[in-house]
Amino acid sequence: MKAEEIFNEDALRLLGEQIAEAEKQTSGEIRVHIEDECSIDPVDRAWHIFYKLEVDKTDLRCGIMIYLAVEDHKFAVIGDQGIHQKVGMDFWNAVRDSMLVHLQNGKFIHALAEGIKETGEQLRTFFPRSHNDENELSNDVSMGGFQ
Image 1: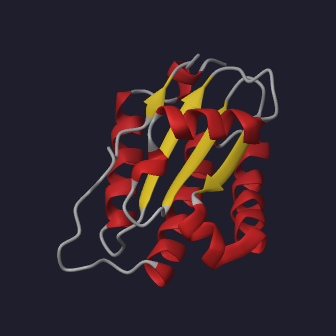
Image 2 (image 1 turned 120 degrees about the vertical axis):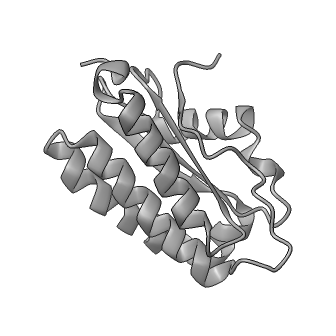
C-alpha cells in the first residue's frame, strides 16, 4: 500500500493536531515524515530528512524526527543533540518498540500517534515549555521523497 492511500487528509490533520498537542507542554519540536520506500538504512534516511527539514535549527537542539517508509516497513526515531544527551539510547529503543507493535499489525497511524505521544512526554520532562516559547517547526506531517 502507498503512503497516500493510508494517510488521507483526515489522518494527516489528526497527526498534525497530535504533534501540536504534544508540543503544548514543551519547548521541543516533533517532525514526522512519511514516504513509500527506503532503499537505505532507515536511520540514515531519517537523518537526511532531519537536515532537509531543518529540524537541527531549534534553539535548544531538541528536535525529534519520526520517519516511516510504508511499503518497506522501515522506520526510525531520532533526536538532536540536546534531547539525545538527556534521554540516551534506552528512550529511543522504548519508542521504537512501542511503535513496532502497531506497525507489525499494519496500524501505521496508531504507530505514529504512539511515537508522537511518547516523544512529547519525554520532551516535556526534559524541555518544559518556557513562557516565551515559539513553535519553531511546522506541525504538518511531510510526505514524499527528498533527494
